[in-house]
Image (cartoon, rainbow, N blue to C red; front, side, top):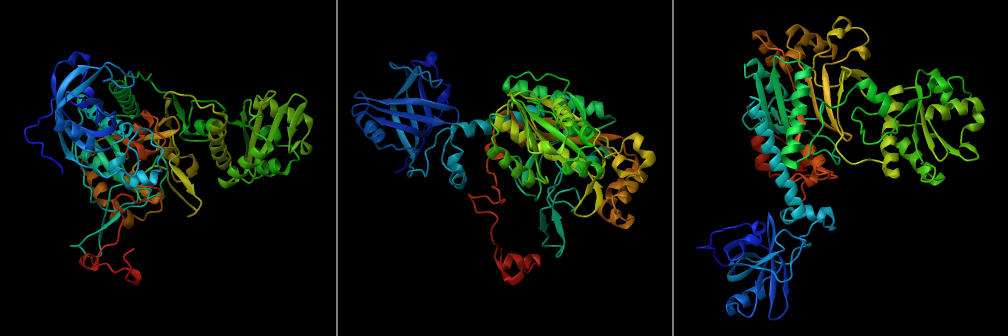
Length: 595
């Protein structure tokens, strides 16, 4: 039966004790990580969120306490009073390895059934089981340290922006549904039946209104929600370090972002991040890396073969060039040994799965060039390809051709990462960079319309103002992304504050004046009353922590995450609700099924 802790007050956490504490009487609380019963001698590893300390019980221990220790099992909750003594058999595996606590009082504060898995670092138990019992999973020392580091990063964030004169302002969680790119989570209103709130995808509009209100420097560690398909670096609910500033230009915001990264890495990991970050235009990173969030920890840059093969008789290359597209490639240095015919076939299937019509390749062997298309091009053209590729003996070149140049670059960008992983050439470290000069519009193949690449409040560049109604592919935005090791950490822009220009942009995005006012009238009305020039950015806190600890998934840095289908295995959310609740909301489900 569990005992009470009346009269016991913690003096130390488990991992606080060192050799200097020998002779001190201490009171500790924690969980049994391990018990070793050697008959006349019992050792218990007591664990709390700081670490482990060894408790000892021997023939000098009070009989009742010794018997109590013998009953303890894994994950029992204990309170222990004892004296710190030097260990005879020291351990260098834990910080408290030089000492142990000789127990004089022991209370079992909570008993435990046998856990469904062992509470240990780097558990190999299936993730589904661990997430079902997340409260146990969170006891694992490595996962606890992730959550603690997240806390320290959040603390450092507030300290940095407070020192820079920012004011933290909370914005609403129940807001008006507005188109911001992803699908909204909708919340039905009981009072206004038939109407819905949305959970914020970001505090975008509210932080802009804070600028109109004159707060000048706003920040918030904000909860955001997007109803979109999940992946390793995406959750339906996430946390954003949200920033907005008045009377600034893009350079001010990039300098602030770099300063924040430098500060938080030094403060929490004692790592010096060099600044300023390299800066690339969108067109440059797409041409060199095939991605607007490139991983620059390895080379293997894309190269253009269009001019080399434009006169080729190889129909794949010829049709791509004649159709206004391009032919591009990547060179896997030393890749011939890794990429057998079977491995190439598998990579070809991967390429087709992401939109390629096929994958051309060539290997440079000691006895010449081997390729599946060599019979369709001249020796001179093949040599030109090898030269452009910078290929040497042992290298393999992969080539994509398509009538859509963006498709070619994007597919090669994905293959570049796939090949780099297989060749194990992705370096360590933290490679930050900025991507700037994004296109304002992107063509949506599904709708057949041009849509905003960023949100519709992003300002076009000054150069684009004179031809907004012309070729939309040539309109660029005052937008910028911070990228770390191939992950987009932050996105931001200078905002539109001129009401006439904002109406013009809405019109170009296919919104009628009436529709635009219905959705965003409160914002454009605010701009009529003296809106300062402003801009900002949002930095993904979850992604930042994930990258700092080099985790493979956001689920390792979020206390209670969702899985691939957006459900939470521990509470079984989402779940059905009873009919009374639906009636209150004025909602009737199809076939009367609450699912």
